[in-house]
Amino acid sequence: MVKVRRPATSETLAGRTWPIGFLLILIPALLPAILPIFYTYLLALIFVMGLLAMSLNLVLGYGGIYQFHHAVFYGVGAYAVALSITRAGWPAPVAFLLAPLASGLTGLFIGWFCVRLTRLYFGMLQIALGSLLWVIVLRWYSITGGDNGIHDIPIPSFLRQILPAYYFILAVVVISLLVLYHIVRSPFGVTLQAIRDNAQRCQVVGVNVRLHQLVAITLAATFAGVAGALYVVLERSVFPSMLFWVLSLEVLVMCLLGGWYTFLGPMVGAAIVVTLRTTAGRYTENWTMILGILLILLVFFMPEGVLGFLGKLIARVALPQGRQQEFKRAESAQAEEKVIPGRSSHE
Amino acid sequence: MVLGFLASQLLVGLSRAMILFIVSAGLTFVLGVLRVPNVFHGSLYMIGAFSAFSIATQLGHHPASVWVAFLTAPLVVALIGLAVERTLLTRLYQREHLMLILFTFGVTLVLNDLVKLAWGADYRSILPPPVLQGSAVLMGVPVPRYNLFLLAVGPLVALGMWLFTHRTRIGKLARAAAVDREMVALLGIDVNHVFAGAFLVGAYLAGLGGALVAPSTSITLGMDHTILIEAFLIVTTGGLGNIWGALLGALLFGLTQSLGVLIWPQFAIVFPYLATASVLLVRPRGLLRSVW
Image (cartoon, rainbow over all chains, first blue to last red; front, side):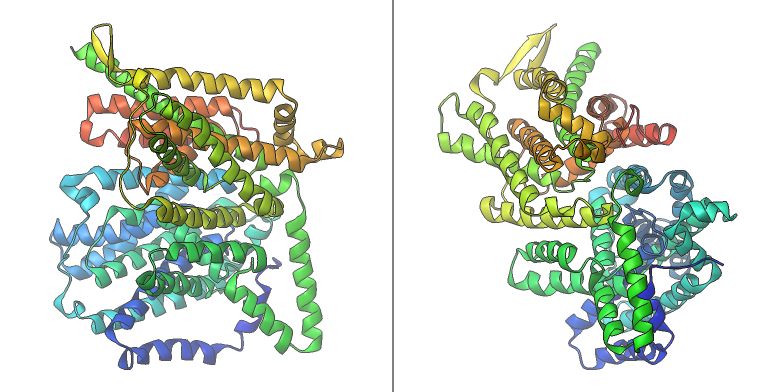
């Protein structure tokens, strides 16, 4: 038996939350009926970025892997759709199926080299390999359009309206999240979390740590590719900054902002970032400063992210007395683990 | 003629490598001593360039104005860095890397918007000091004087860093803290002061890089993004925390790009990334010994 310690908050509550999950699907399905078109578009964008962030969180939050260049897989997915429609002239369904495949293979390839390393070294090698892909896309004008990107991608006509596009995106995102949820709760997912908590111990009891990490990276890259394809559905254009490192940082921020030890946290983080950009961005050019201050405050006062914080709050209020004790113990165990300074925590 | 072109490309690459080295040295020093992957290092570089622009234009046409900018702009940046370190970062040293990245990224967003407020989104540029304007002829090839100047400054900074880390008390302490901070603390030394000093030096180098690059490029928002990723790759190629590694990595990065122009101009910018990725595939922990 592997003991899973960290995700105490959301996981313990998840068993009783299926009606909430149902509402989480029903509300977005009904919202376009009352929302202006712009907000429908905004919501769709949130779902796309949220799926991207949640795919990252499979390796980051559940795997404890420093996936520093996740945007590459998103960009590869988007470009796979764009290139196979515009350059190869393949039908759209083929292009959409190709996107996750291409991203997954890229993930497998980059992950193959990276899993030999840990922590910061893992992240830096991934940045190096990912940036190589980015710079190739940026310069290969004859194929990728270089820094102009590719615009007006002829996706099927029924997806060019915002409403059908919205429901298409919603459906794909919901299915993806269900699959992700099952992955997280499967024996594989639990083992992944065990590796995050103590890789050495897992290795000793016979778990193939690197294989599990590689599979996780490939899966995460695949879902990032799905998000990339959905972005093309929404915007009908791609550009090289989708593979740029700054986007990776932004997605990382979404995970940490929403709560990287919770399942839906990254979606919340994506919602905050996207909403802030589009709404605050309309009133002030300096919306990024607001996000920056938010991040700094978060690091100091709410390091477990918004959902993590809410989960804690709910647990404190709603759990029966006996469970509360248990919860506090789990928390202090976490806290202890984090304050141990020195070399071991950095290697 | 071909040889001349080769020589001038070599010089361009080397002078670019010097800027990259100065910035990466600061990044790697902070990474080695404080274990902080400082994402706002690029913003400090940008602030260095903008400050140099403002100082130089404020002083007007006096021949020394750019020299004054070279001397003072990095100090401004160092003070900004120190302010962030003393007020906020110092409380976070116990936290894991992801939180530090999140925090420093937050600072990046704030600093970049402040730069936008202070200087606007226009392209700016300054001229090199009068002495360094124009070209000198070297072996029959015209060579920009400013590039020659950068070529001299790079080694000076390297020497300065060596003297600082080997000949001053705080520099030695910083090196010791990089290897084992608990031991340094156990010896009764206030590690906090060492950290503040190390961060000051790191920020100063970012500012110096920005000030020195200002006369040879257009100063603009977004110049922080490219330098940041380049500096991070250089630091990793050289070995985290190793200043000589940063020099090697910077040379690799600068030279592959400028020589790549000779081979395949359109893809010149791809070569340094290809080179660093190849090095990391063979030596994932960098060329030289990391202090980690």
